Image (cartoon, rainbow, N blue to C red; front, top):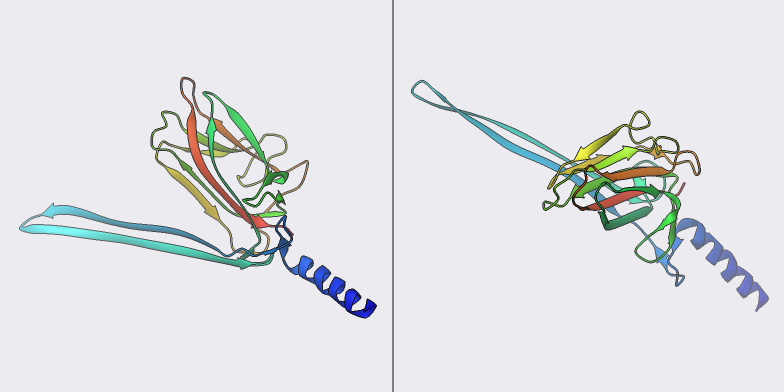
Length: 194
């Protein structure tokens, strides 16, 4: 009986290393698809007719469960509201929780998508925090404004992605660009635990 118990404990430990466990002890697995698509037609007049030019670009990134290239095992998503002129720092190393209540500690980011509500008056600014920012953007303080109704998407398929370093490189700053009204935005961050 002791051998069976030892075998079960070893098997359980192996499962914990291969799969994250939900608070109830059930294994979790992540499968992700990030897609961007552009289809545009430019039409103009020419003598005795018309002319059109079409542009088409579609990029789909699929990430399977894991921590290597083309893989991710963590996801955080939320709809958030910032007060007028408000700022928040999203701490990606041990503060955010997933949909099941498990604390997330990102080691790497593989995708970030931010969509601003169409009813916003101000922009939602996504910024690399000045001191302890995740190096998603090139320099501290760099970022992108997401205008009302607009979106920002970034993704990487390599094993490295963007490294998250607890205490020195783990904050993603989101700000409301102006006074007078709050802003609402949706955010999804996909990454890896190792």
